Length: 361
Image 1 (cartoon, one colour):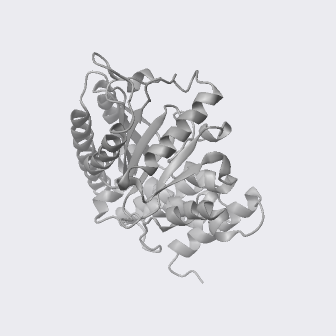
Image 2 (cartoon, rainbow, N blue to C red):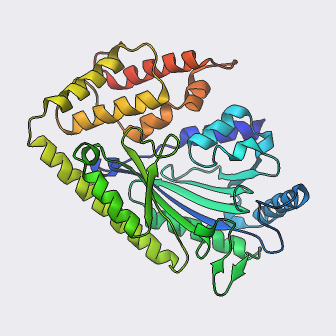
Image 3 (cartoon, one colour):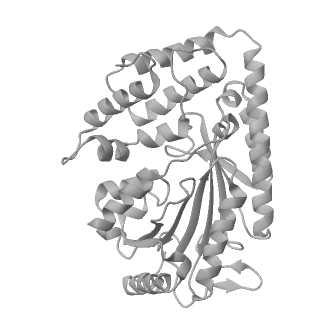
């Protein structure tokens, strides 16, 4: 039970800090390396016995690597429901992972000296291993260095599936080659409102990068939040992928700032109306769903950036997103019972008002 509390406390203690407003365009950087262990089938066809063997092997290897001494090994079946949901909300594991938790684990850094970095190793998700680092803002290169360091230490004691012609072998064809997935999370309301985002996405798709919703299912975009990732790794080296996405992140900041300046220079009553309607909803709504909150907060943040509204406090969009997720609400504000959806939505509305309204009491 103590280790499960550690998961909660460590993630709660993680406070991403942004050094400038530009980092509120590119909110986060994620880099993941996917590896499979030689001698075992892919997870899509592996049996339960081999899955447990991989779990035990990785736990043993982790215990012998000095640089991983500060990492704790958590078997997913031993983690309570709320803690698992917290891992999903933080994008450490996927929602599909918890549907079948047998033979799966997460290895999480328990020594968060640097609270601007979250590093984790997931065992037996889609591939045998996923080594991931998450950092705020445009930190793709630093995330890559972190996961590469861990991967090299693991490779000294594990043999990864590798083909001299194809590179690292994975069950997901799009990961064959480097096995690297690099991602940035961006908040671009000005590009969406000005419709610049349409051409930007077309250009990205032509260069081998995909754009999807950060929250929600399918192509539904919520809160003007987009996830931009490399689509293929075969035929590219890791460094070129990192360099390309770093350049894309710089470009999208410039595009968002240009779009914002254009919108500032024109009088647009519909934009002002949207901002103040969002303010009214936040000020008076009794319950707010997570998805609705993202939409309202995005428009309010946009209104603050354009100087349309000053009745609200400046806020860290990404920090507030994490604070008002269902799992965070239950863990931080509800004790000793499973909350109803209405209770969670009511508390969420109160938390948002407390964080945003200048006259809140």
